[in-house]
Image (tube, rainbow over all chains, first blue to last red; front, side):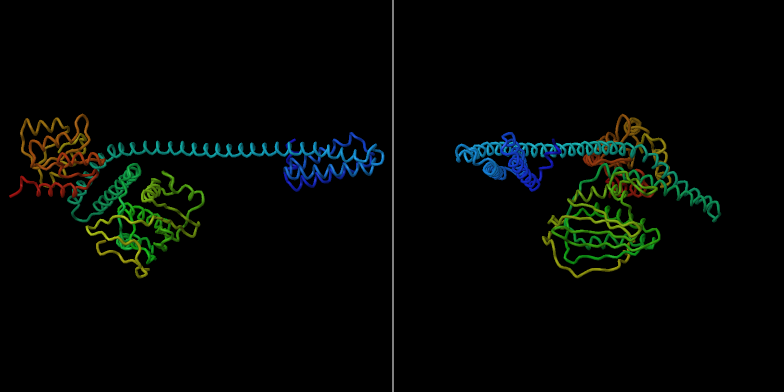
Length: 399
Length: 122
């Protein structure tokens, strides 16, 4: 039944099938010489036309079929009627019946279609609602998990940092003792000093992991203030020039002169940039080029950090911002998740484009909005043309 | 120096001792109160851990600020919350130190607080 109805679901196909059937039934009607039991067969094309092509076509086919019946009647048995008006009268009677059937079927089809649309719309709403609830449930589970991580991190910070502190202080005392005992440069003394420096470094790593967890679980409130973006970038980037130079990474900037002041929390935004810069450096173990580019589009500014390193594969890229996901041997998997959280707190977004073996670009998009300045005499300019700045950065004298 | 962690207490005491200080250590707030009130010993500065079992470092802080307000109190903690910092500030804490810390940070902080202390003033 469903397949038959789907056959006439197309309007042109229904009209074509109905037309062919009217002609076929008309010919049969003519050839059988006016057999009354042939007449109900006209209902078939009428039903197809009314159901498949709608009310207007149903009315049209009612007239067409009545006319066909009349022509067949006239040609086959016309002279045998007791009165010449009888076939016309019969045709009119049939027309009335056909019209009633056609209108009824067309209306029925319309009701069915309306119901079908409603069911589809409700099903779609239900599907969206179920997907939304599933996502909310997942988000709830995730935030519950993160809350657990937060309290675990706080507890861990206390329980681990106390012994770390005493180890660190004792090691410093021990270093002094070793230095005194091996005042003359002996091989054993040098090795002991190196080993202790290594232990100190490892302690620093443990503290770094704890800080990452604490930072993620307890992000300080973002306090955006109006800052000259390019001055902020230049000032901060100078701090990383030595470490990039040591890794043979060339740092360059390409600033959009139309950008002047941007609302950002300098401490937290630098945390994001530093994280992206260090990730880029690690993606270029043999050195490479690192570009910091600023641009503006539709009341938004973008800061792009672009490297020509190893790039990130599709599956890893999809999970980049997921907490605890990492491809590094010693990573916590919280750096990018925390960065994304900070950028989101600024009302912006952090995105990544990457081509494996070609490099990656991480783009911070921030809304361009007026914010109070920290200075006692606030200025209120937001966009102000400046000379184009594209240059290699030199290390700050304080580094 | 007050800390319930024996290793921490020993390490800090030794660093301060190496820095030229005479250190009295207490493993709990009760022990510290005994030193402060019962024995009535003089102190130039008090260093205390914040989170300790039974009684926290805030207790010693308020006691010091009510009985010997001129003595600087340095609070150390492995985990600070904004609320804890605000509360300690209100109680009159002179300095907050994060654990872990380097010996030079510890010595520099103590020296600075002693230099600014009203009891060492003109």
